[in-house]
Length: 51
Image 1 (cartoon, rainbow, N blue to C red):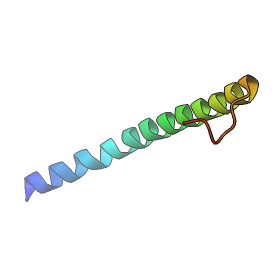
Image 2 (image 1 turned 180 degrees about the vertical axis):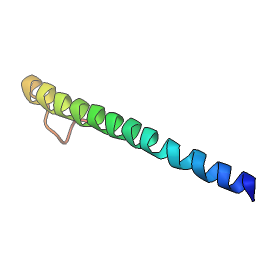
Image 3 (image 1 turned 90 degrees about the horizontal axis):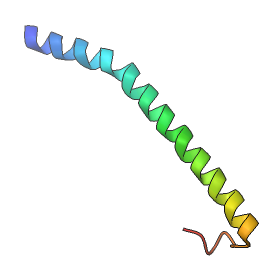
Image 4 (image 1 turned 180 degrees about the horizontal axis):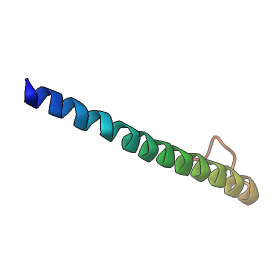
């Protein structure tokens, strides 16, 4: 029983950290996509040709 409670407390304290990591990575991905759109439009590549 004690081990279960310890694991639960550990996972609860880890969740905010994981959330912040995920949020940071999603923002980076959004930024990358925006940069790709800007680059593709500047170089004349249509969105259907981009990856």
